Image (cartoon, rainbow, N blue to C red):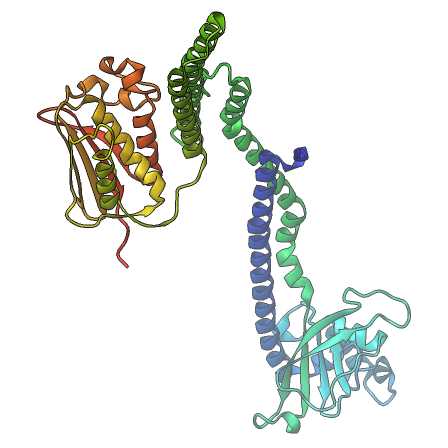
Length: 502
């Protein structure tokens, strides 16, 4: 079933750009929000400290004439009707009024202060600026009992419909209890409340908010664009490799993907792909040779069968049963070998029970003594069991092929030894006193359908698959078969993993 093609938005470049944008948004945005929080918190803390100092100063001056004159609301504020009292000195009071109405508290100079003075019953005695506005216009009230340090109040809009700067805002009021004798504020004569306006903290974080609204999206888009460009540049060699791979076919596997000289992961990927292509090309070439050799080998027994039948038919005689049997037997052996090679290539590594290779070697050598005529050239030496995990028929086929190969070349003697040579290994050696194997042919003889010159006679030399099958079986078990150095004749060695102790 064909897999659905992924949309273009799922490409590596898009995913990299989106991931980079998200990372930038998290890092830059998170850093900006953290900085904003720090600035806002520090600004509020500084405003509270300032408000505390102002509340202390107001507490020491709220009962002065200047405080009474400049208060906007409250019981202690001087009324203009006081200056119209006929019993008073109009000239002196008028001069005092003109002087006091242009002054603030001496401690604060000419700056307005958001404050209120409340008695111990919650009545407003004095108020100024924003607090005076909200006391007068929206009916702001204060606790009846004096608080310890600060309170939070909600400033409601004016009932007249006017709009104030802090309408609907919850603000902090720093409290200072005037005349309190100790931690208990209930004996205070009055409480001074100073407003901590959030506008100062908001003005401090305004540059950060401006950057968050305008600079952060631009920064995120810039990071995404850079990630898009960098990813496309990094993946350009991959696209060239993909295009080259698309041109490679089973008919022409000579091309290789371009390998960049960067030495990074893409370069290693190209190196791995070329190595894989080399193995595939080698496997394809071996398969073509195998098919050609198999067809050639099968043609000979089939041609012999055909000739035998045609000769018998031409002369009106029955076909020679011995010749037919020989040709059919040879054809069957060749077919069985080809099927075995195919199965060894396609099946997984074997699992089975422990098999004693020494016992198998003794049985195979013993069988040769019962042949007609008996083959008494073989001698076996196996002093102890040599167990290998696997299938008995496959291990027996490996040893039988090595013995058959030695039987073709040995003159008078074949020595077979089975021993535990190295830790965890079983070593089987088959030595003969024949002509030996030239050094140049020690690897070639394990190729399929390969024969040395002395074995070209198919009646004695076989099809050239025995050693290839032996090596494939050993490799399937995690071992190997090779030709070792020998003073006389040939020495074939099979090394197999030994079964673990139980």
